[in-house]
Image 1 (cartoon, chains in turn blue, yellow):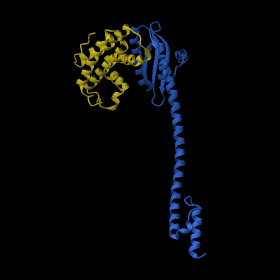
Image 2 (tube, chains in turn yellow, brown):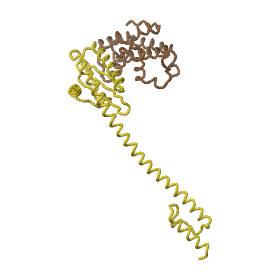
Image 3 (cartoon, chains in turn brown, yellow):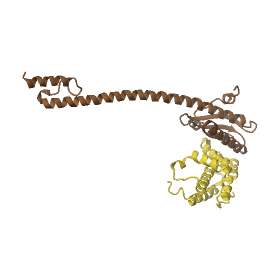
Length: 189
Length: 134
């Protein structure tokens, strides 16, 4: 082999170690200049790929850290949220005049990220008592917002003389804690 | 949608229009479920009118569509109608869970207490002339 052929062979060997060329490449038809350019491109590509891999590893690490932090935040918010929601229900049930208004169930839709919950009480009472119940919800909503930084959207449905769409209620308020549990949740504290 | 939201007369007209609508069907007892929703939307426009008149809020802000924001504003700024407004809000919201059953007592109680309170307050505080009498 003459000198240019030797040089071309060496260059080809280098190229074989890169990702952008393989045996099928028609290296023998390329000039030394072209092969050198290809090697330069390969090196630059290699650096880029290396950087990308590094970035991806960093991203993966970052994602893992973010996920862990997110999980911790969710867990903390869920704990706090459940406690506040139970407290809210407990307060309403405790202060509600049982002789006038019967609370049949307490239903919840809870957003742990935003510290907010939609709650629904199914009650049974005379229509005249509904306004008092609504006023009570107003008061407890304000207290929860001020004391717990928790946003309640309290609502009620009076079952008196009504046929309810329980499927829809279940869809809007999927969580239904046991009313006796809610009532007694804080009695031992 | 919000181009007229800051125009007080648009809210007054809407209140009057909704009151007319309410009167139109209420005597028949056939659409009592809708009476609750219409009553609430009368109150919504009264509150929006009040927010504009008192220069509390610019209703062109996107969050103005949010009932939560309006509820908070009522509680914060118009405490004398807050309970009535929230009652209408709750009754209107929970309507969807009830299959329709004719019930005149419930509807008349809502209209003659919560809605009347809201409209009387408007006439007093906002110098409107709804003179609600049903």
